[in-house]
Image (cartoon, rainbow, N blue to C red):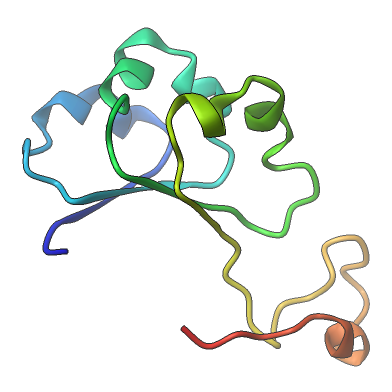
Length: 107
């Protein structure tokens, strides 16, 4: 794998057609379901190799699951990067106490 495009939401998506044709992997970042509903964006990602990086915000992937987008776009992996330094998203005042409940995996 030589070429990876990290694709975030926002105004930069207007230039998606300027990406080179030989990208090996697209990494969609955070909530991306509404963007995939835009014809120019969704059609671009058809038949591409895609991974989806999500944060620890509860429910972030829910709309994509309901819409069947993981299947439709054949998203191969969902990645939730986190470290022992991140806090519990349901209790931002937890300090370091709750870190024992979250596992860390090296890649």
